[in-house]
Structures are given as C-alpha cells and as structure tokens.
Amino acid sequence: MIKFQKKYNKLFLNDIRKAIDDYKMIQPHDQVAVGLSGGKDSIFLLFCLKLIQLTSIKDFELIGIHIDLGFPMDIVPLKNYCINNHIPLIIEKTNIAHVVFNERKENNPCSLCSKLRKGALARIAKKHHINKIALGHNSDDVIETLFMNVLKVGKLGTFHPNSYNHEKDMRMIRPMIYIREALIASIVDAYHLPVIKNTCPIDKKTTRQEMKNLLIQLENIHPDAQQKILSALSNYDIKNLWKKNSKK
Image (cartoon, rainbow, N blue to C red):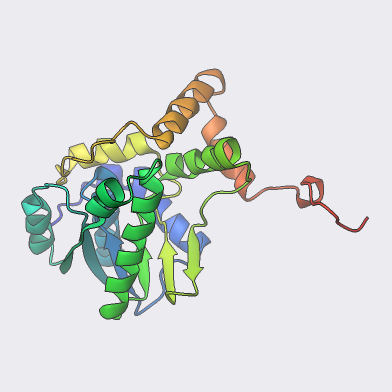
C-alpha cells in the first residue's frame, strides 16, 4: 500500500485537487481509468488519484488501463504496483507500433500513435463501463502543445482539462495541468514509483522535445513564463483575437 509522506502534500495533491475542482473532473460514482503508458507521468497520476480516493473523494472507482503498443516492455513492476495498491489493471495488446512504423511509415508517427492509442483507450473503457479516462498531461505538456499548434499549425489552442468525445461518449480529464514535469520526476523518485523504460525508437527526437527545449530557453529569459502562459489560457481577450468576416 501507498505510504503517504505528508511533507509532499502541499507540493502536489493540493494542485491535483484544485484542477479537479476547477474543471469538475470527478463526480461521485465515476468510473475513472488512468491511461498507463509506463512513463513517469501516468504512474504519478495513478498514485495521486489513489491518494485522493483514500483521503478525499472516496466514492469513485479507479482503474488502470495499459495499451500494449507492440514495443518490448517489462510491465511486471506496473502489475505488481497495481496489485499491491488494490487497483484493477486492464492490459490490451495491440499492433499500433507495427501500423505506425511499418505499414503507414508516418512522417509524424507521434500524432498517429497518439490517435490510435486514445481510440484503443476509449474502446476498452467503453467495454468496461468506464465513463472517464484520466490522462497524464502536465503543465509543461499544456504549453508545449500550445507552442506546437502556434508554430507548426498556425492555430491558437491547446487541449482542454475536461473534454467530451461525442463519438465515443467519453470524457477525457487531465488532473495534472497545474503540476510541473520537474516536480513529477522528484515525487516519482521519492516514492520509488515504477517507471518502465520507453523503447519507442523516436523517444526524445520529436517535435514535442523541440517545444520542451523552447520553453526552457524562454524561462531562462522570463522565469515566470510558464505560470503567465497558463494564466493567459483562462484570461484571454476575445475581442482582440482576429476573426475573419466578423460583424463590426
């Protein structure tokens, strides 16, 4: 079972609770599944939601779903963690890696992989009567996605903390939007949470890594850039954003 170190409480659980409250992510009797990739972010999210289940919101169900993409991975530590903390774990084997890298040979494999993985998550969640999928996107991811949209697509936007997929009849929630990646790494290390080595051949060679480096450079010039950008996402001036063919 999780041994809760209270000295870390104000550093992360309060921010997780705030995100859940701000965007009404979890309601009584929800069935919440965490998409477990094996990386530090998703295991941290599972850890946090288990603590919240134990200490705050006691009447929601917590489940783990691991989508096996087809890369060689040792997920035994993840299985053991879930068993020890009484968290049901669903493992779904897929051929997503083969489709992305061998069949489609995508120039932007991360985009297709993400789309197929989310589709598999939604399908499995629906099969098990799960109504919400919790994803491990942190505050750095929010800004990196904003940068990618602006610089690579020419679109102003990022993902929403609590979004509804009408086609899948499923909500995607992101309780870690106020948590920095560096803090996540320190908590994962402090609690010895199981992190599975990423065996994707393009790990850390992606556009997202470029945006991560850009954020680091920006914070070297403006140390409060991350917090200011996050604030701007809910403090926008709609009147001064351009809209073609709008009435005066």
